[in-house]
Image 1 (cartoon, helix red, strand yellow):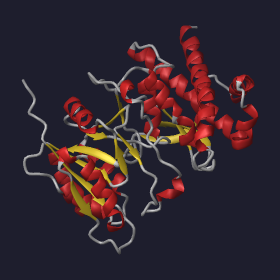
Image 2 (cartoon, rainbow, N blue to C red; image 1 turned 90 degrees about the vertical axis):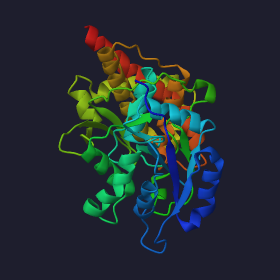
Image 3 (cartoon, helix red, strand yellow; image 1 turned 180 degrees about the vertical axis):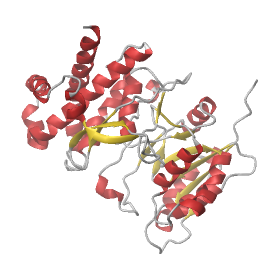
Image 4 (cartoon, rainbow, N blue to C red; image 1 turned 90 degrees about the horizontal axis):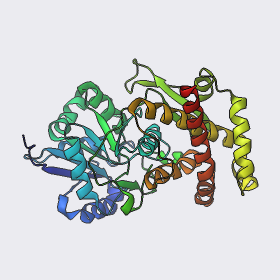
Length: 370
């Protein structure tokens, strides 16, 4: 049976202070006919939910799907074509088109890239909403849900996750993100998070053109706490809305026979091979480098474990993998490295991150075969 054609409506949500940016987003995608929806109480307490409610309610009568994009989004050059392809592949899902480079989901994107998938599950404790598509009826229902269950000061991305979870809607994201995030002054205080660029923006010729394949969510997700600069593992927890709770990556690995000392020996060997060791240590300290290494190592372990389960071989050097791993370092340290140094530090972290991922994958492969 041929699926019905996609009929997409959409809105750009904004605040009067950023109306010009919102109009630029809409004008840049003329084929979508995006409405510009403005915060109805711009003098009220800073909150994105007010504009989000109007934006999600602005569904065209005949639409099958509805896009809401924020005024600080930077769409890719082939945004509309790729968007339609994603909707056709996952017509019943909530499809995020961006996740920032330090999120939980960014690490799942990296696993998906290494295993050759084009899409990944969203695993954050919010729904990435810089650019998000919902089935039309789901979009229409958000306002009623907010009225019944959401405090007016709640973050819109958390309210959306709770809503989608209540409905049992699958939440997915393309490995190659469709938008980047412009670092404007946040109206709701998010600048304290540092730069929030996309997790994976490969060059156009490296973007998979389908058919789409979706990674099954790994039980444990690596995570780098960019607030505290600490290595975490997000482990299963059925009591939480997102299905996971943060724990120590050290503990998770130690329970599987990998000690902190084991990993530090490997880190020292990797740093000895790095031509800019002194620069990295000066800019980050050995403490931060050790925490980065642990998460990279954990990422490798989980990737190899998942590869064995699905019968795939990890690719550590392909263009999609390279684009996804390149954002790991800067996404992790963006709050502790001055913006002027971030590109250089991120570039120098790339080979170290790759060494850590390879080391973890090798350890897991050896364990499984022994």
